Length: 311
Length: 291
Image (cartoon, rainbow over all chains, first blue to last red; front, side, top):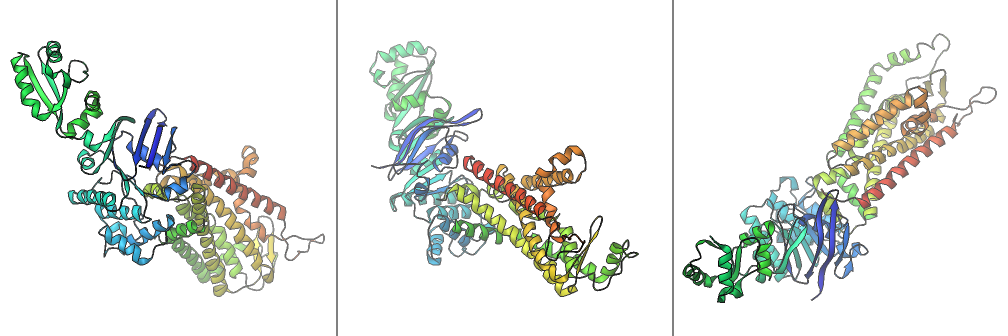
């Protein structure tokens, strides 16, 4: 598999803030790569560095096997992007905007090609309307048409569902799947909304405070059958000793503070509960953390669950 | 580069705001012409009142050339504001709309991009001056006819023969273009540092106002810096309307009294333009596009 994006030791310092800190990852051909993180985690800064809008303080970026610094023009010809929100010239029509950006991308588009492209994103019949009359969802669709007009190999979407209604969000999701499955594009999509990424991504990278927290295939990270269980008892130390001496020992995860963590199949939960009661563990709580939401929140607020997942 | 320039010009001239300047110029010139047409003789009598005791005038003093001179004197002080409206919006306006980041994700060189933007702003400035020339000169010729140009300077009166005036206006408009391009370069440079156009427009005008005050005050401290201020040189288009005289104090037709001063001023303006545009390119290439 060819590496479409290869980022090594990427950092960006804004005066006193390190927005991105020694970030490394690779995106392979055909991936829908979900880039997850809370607001302010460093997603947009990373994406802007991928698109040469921001100069990295340190690190290397290669796209299509070419160094971004030295082959900027060649690389950007193969990249389509939407950054945060679809901004375009409000005083121009959809057709004029699309033609203008096609020309900038070095593509000579006939009227038919542009009209077809607008039809593809559901803006057929509105091509001559000024963009200022468009809803946020329509602007987003036009933004997608702009990012696709030059038939790029890599599509970078930064929070593409921001400000969209549920139907708009579903449309963007379907479009990402269509681009990946039907058109063979590599899609790099950032979001702070987990369920969106879960539904489309083949690989996922989660960052927090500019640092990589975890990277892996979506199947590994989001396997709903695997559960992290947090156990709390009146005497956790004693409970831990008992667990270490039992057959549950194999499921134990490295612990932080007094939290006991086990990674196991969710069908085993009733047996674990029964065993703990039998051992008089004075159980206060047995809390499964199996939703993606839990996972993400834990990932971005403390690392113990991640380590549990990735060990 | 040509493609980028075409796109930038397309954007400028498709935007309604662009035409405010042309409409304002048309209205201002129209008002002045109307006023002079209706009651111009009284205005001329007032201007020439101090000379009437010593000189006898015949012919048409209030003619197209004088009208155009009056218009230029009044207008070239205010045109920088109209230029700043566009030039100071070139980068900051795109940043405000969010289109700057989209533009820069396209395979275009940042240097070519910034130069194309400056050239587009320069074309707009040129068009605005052509518009002024057409209305102030061509329309005045049609309305008032032509004759010798009589200009009252501080200590003397200049009379330029009718057939010696037109080329001076071409020169004056050419020089005015240089002066206005300096304003364009300044507004453009300032637009790099803001995410909306209000700041750069106000800053451009503030700098022009402050520098103009410094350029005109006869205080020794300020006089030392006056040669370096572009505003000192912006008004030197008037040099085209001052003739050289020979040893017998006879006017040399087709001459300019102080061509060295004119050339020196033009050089100062060109250096300002080059300096500001070069700085814009260097800063823009290093700039992180956050908005």
